Image (tube, rainbow, N blue to C red; front, side, top):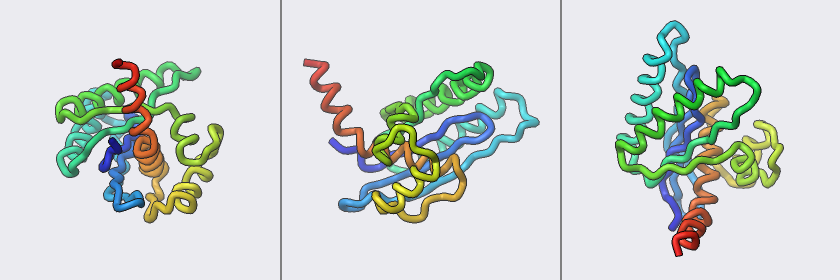
Length: 170
């Protein structure tokens, strides 16, 4: 019922956070992290290809049970949101091609799962991952740390989401 090895993704075109978390007994461990930065000089389509390839490589390198991605929240900057939505699309495509189930989480859900507070800042999220959840070796890159939080959120929420789907199917 619990997903045991999850790829967390903080999507973007310029920078993508990737993190693989696994259960080790009652603890959660970081197996791998990466921040992919794509060159601004490339065409957007080439940058999206790099994002897709990085996710395909991460999926291929780990025995994943799921991919968790941060859901795009539309704000005032529609241009930026469109770029992130395109990046999310190639990430979802990579997961589909590999047969990996995907769950999306709003930033509020991630913060609630990690800290218990929906308006927590990035520093609070990092602190709670370390202290309350005892996750060691958090990456220093913000996008990779966000990907850790997204994967952790999924590991906390996957059982309740599966139960909800089962109840809805009846």
